[in-house]
Image (cartoon, rainbow, N blue to C red):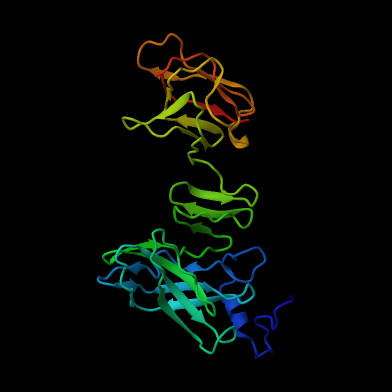
Length: 322
C-alpha cells in the first residue's frame, strides 16, 4: 500500500484519475472502517431513492442521489444520481412461501471487473423459504441496498427500508431508530429520533442517557404490566438513575435479603454509596413496607421478607451517581 498518486489536484498534472475524483468528491463522508478510503455509503437524504408500491408486481424508486461504496477500500465511492421515478418488475410469488428481494443501486466499472461501465437500479430476486433470507449480491459490481421487498403468497408486497442517510465526518448525522452503527471516532455526533443528540466514543459507544434498560428479575419477583403499567426498568438521566414499572412478589413470597435481579447493575448504573429506599406498595395494608438496597457492586436486594402477591411500585425511585 502507498500514497495514491497523482494527488488531487496538482496544478501542472493533466492525468488525474477517476479514482482521485471519487476520493475527492465524497471525502467528507464517514468511511466504512478506520483508515479506509471508501465511505460507508448511503443515500443523500432519507427522502432520496425511496421505494414505493405503484400497484401490481412492480416497485417504484424515486429520484435522488446515492453513494455506492466501491469494490475495494481504495476505490472510493461512486456518486449515483437518479433524476426521476423508475419502475422495476417483481417476480411472481411462491404459492405458499415468502421470499426476500432486494432493490439496489448497482455500479459496474470495467476498470475493476467486466466490460460494462454503467449504473442502474435493479431487483435481486431471492429464494422462497419458510424462513427467507436476503439474496447474495452478485460479484463483479458495486451495490447499495436500498430496500428489502417481502414477496408473500398471493403477490402481497411489503417494503422495508435498508439504506441509511450517508454520514458526514464532523456532522450531526440524523439516523433511523433502527441504526446500530457504533461510533467510528471519539466525538462522533448523531441525532437519534428517540434519544436526541448523542456524542459517542469508540470505547463507550453511544451514551445510554434516556435509554430504558430491562434487567432480568430473580425468581422471587415478576414484572406486572396489567392495566397499562410500563415494563420494569431503569435509565440514566444526567447523573441520576431512575426506575419505573411495577413488580409483584411471586408465589412463595420473598425472603429477607432476597435478590431482586439475576445480575448486578452495570458499572455505569452503580451508586457511589449504598442506597436504601422504600418503594410504594399497592393492595392491602402491608405488615412491612417494601424496602430495597443497591450497593456499590450493583446488587439489588429486598431488605425485608414480603408476602406473595405484594405489588411494589418503582416509579420515582432514583439516586445520584458519584
